[in-house]
View 1 (tube, one colour):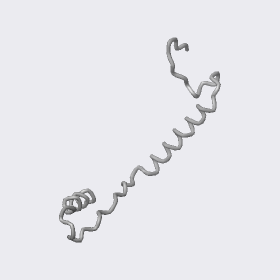
View 2 (tube, one colour):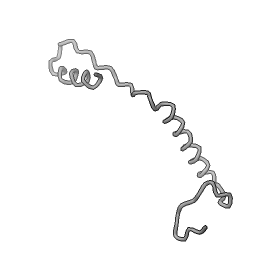
View 3 (cartoon, helix red, strand yellow):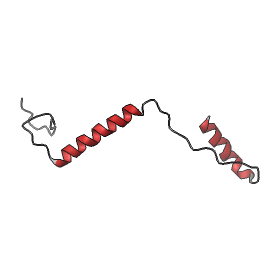
View 4 (cartoon, one colour):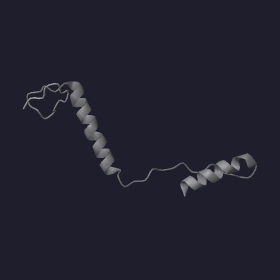
Length: 71
């Protein structure tokens, strides 16, 4: 089958030599796929809210926003 004008390279095609950059890209894609599969049901860890002790009332809004994001 011929693909005139196509820039697509099939990495499974045995007639196409695989360069180091193609092999690296394939390895990276496989590694990313594994990470996504293993971390699929984990939730991202949010930073804990900065402590609010009432000494600076200007920081209250930020504290409340950080709490809302965590809840």
